[in-house]
Length: 526
Image (cartoon, rainbow, N blue to C red; front, side, top):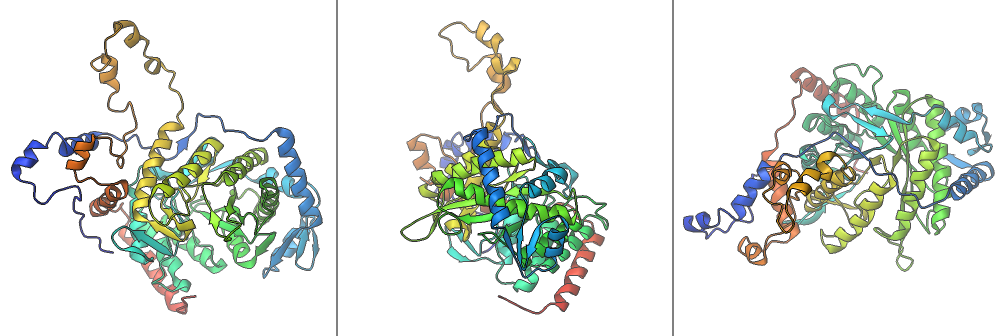
């Protein structure tokens, strides 16, 4: 895909100068109004809304008790990482071969006794530091897709250029607080080496917080070293990465994930401990059972992190999907995963650790009505449930197999709406507007009142993708649908991108480290 400057796709090449003049109050006027709007950007959201609760205290306690029963009687399997077994045994777990069983309450006491309730993830630009936990929500983009999609070229394998494009788009969005991690898989780079290019791209093209590699312990170590260089040579024990560690459900933790988790924990970097459950296949099909298994798997993973380094930041993750019982395909935007999300968020609050879940998820292959409905049905529970770290907040298509350029832009617009929504009701003097109500006679509109004039610029969220003009004006402007408008927006944003400052000496050291490591690694594409 080319990064050539974008053309305004709403323009009509046959327009005369007279037409431009005649329409200056239309499209051009609206564009000028949007440009004059100052976005109230915040480094992360602080919710004023109380989390929406769907389960009683008795139900949550029952799920906790059942999860402890699973951990005590079934336990978890540790595959290909014998180093973890003595760690668990020394803490009081029963280790028989590669099976680890935990006495009732052991995991909970270890996690709740040392894991922080919230932590700061430092960004290269301190203005972009985020606080993960408490009443805060951090939006991060899509993760892990091997394909990309745009309406010009359709679906294709992702490249490093695509990866860098999405890092730039996330950097430019005021609604994304985090640069993410593997926003897409750059399949034109060998698997053995691409983690170096990805972490470098986050450091080079953005100064927001980012995630490290987790596909091998050595790649996590490379991520830590790149972060150390990028942050000036010494992390000073700061947490600068929050990285994704997935269980192999059901009830298995493998050596790849545990090695990465151990590396990050030893260096005080945060781990998102996330069971990835396709209900009906990787767990029982019922939502309560998914909650039980998720809690058991996550407790075992978080316990390992705390045993490696007490107090290392950890996030309780949950990614649960329903499935089509006819085809076996995962489904998104359905009621059952939302029920699991609300339940798991409450369990994380009871445990006293930050929570990760949600996003803008869809099975649709295109940025269409299905994508919009399913994404909204995932994003709203995410916000109402009180999720602290939201992965896949923008760009997700095709059940995660693809990231869409237009979908990314459309999702970011929805994140902007959520930014306004979480502030709740403004009951200040300005919000109640008593003076305006007392001084405006009955039957008179409020358009010219002092209160309206003082608030008009920021009174309502302004979408940059929706069209609310008349049918005639919309037709005259080209009759574009939302995806076509988003297509023009991502192209324009990439053409306007300017990189954040990065010290030349730091950049040179990063590149030298990458070159040295690549020389040591074989070219492996699988």
